[in-house]
Image (tube, rainbow, N blue to C red; front, side):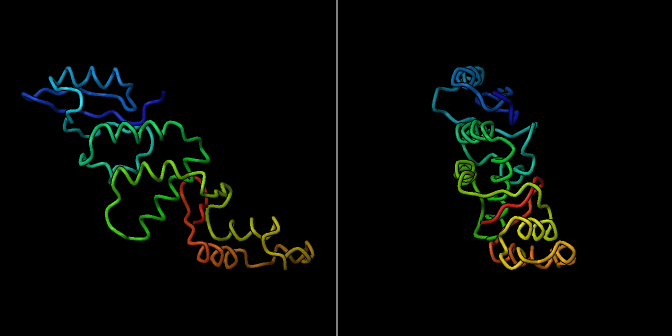
Length: 178
């Protein structure tokens, strides 16, 4: 399993240790033993290293349990590029809704929901999105436009209309519609 985060854990009597996440159950038990905690106890934690998903930093404030953080990191290691883009898009859509704090259980839910999201990796702005939709038959009226006129279409306007209608967002890896 690839590392997603390294967390510094604090336990009883001022004891500290670092734990790479996701951690196996035995690694988790070993860390708790170093902190003189019983299984099921929840140490305080903070992330000291990100190996990916740096954009999650504002949502990982130490308020959830280390077990929830481990579950999130385990799911994140399963995401390929396409699903990672979908996850980032779903998160951005949640941020745009402004319905309150996005907590780790919600991040876990989003990570498991990536199959419900479409991703257009080659579209990183409205112009590219409009071109993609026009060139791939999503706009029936453009199918009869001669090639000499096709390139003169306002792809930016077309892409903006689709993005707004779909409540889509651009991520660092492409476009994700709602």
